[in-house]
Image (cartoon, rainbow, N blue to C red; front, side):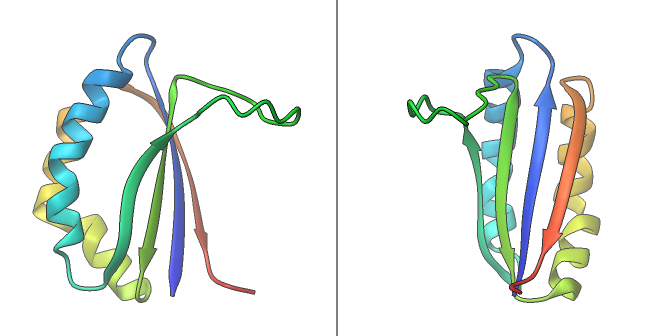
Length: 101
């Protein structure tokens, strides 16, 4: 199993627009062979002192059966289209690709 944590920093005031586009793509991703889990998440105030809130970041939580499935996902037509649609809304992306230790 491969886990992916993608932190997407969106431009000021563009989070809702970004999430609308992102969420229209989610069912297509979940239908992909090898996708176990895929969803966007945003910060919620928890009162935990070490938490760093950032309302401009959308964190995408993903689980894939293997690296091959993840790589197919990244090259799929709907992901290429999605990246084109959000390119002017995104300031930066940080990606962690993980496996259980």
